[in-house]
Length: 76
Image 1 (cartoon, rainbow, N blue to C red):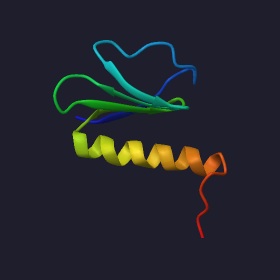
Image 2: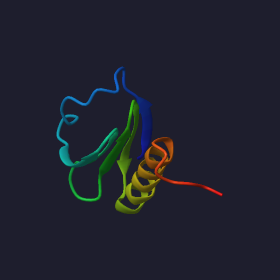
Image 3: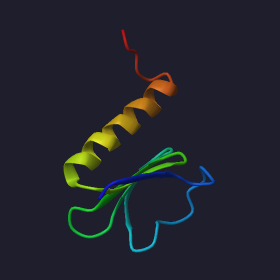
Image 4: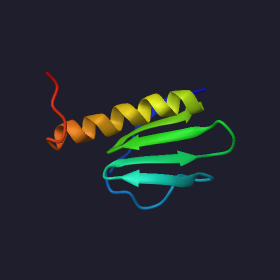
């Protein structure tokens, strides 16, 4: 079951217990814990217990938001 929570720090130190780091792009990280169980972290916000398709959506949203905040995307 998906859950959303916030960490106390934006600093990435190590994967959550029993998670494997799959990729990191600035403040965005993707981690996997077993088959079809993913976690997406963007800054202090964590979305855990995601299916593959839900993780794709959350990862895409986080990456595009980060790019927009950095001025690399334009909406309009």
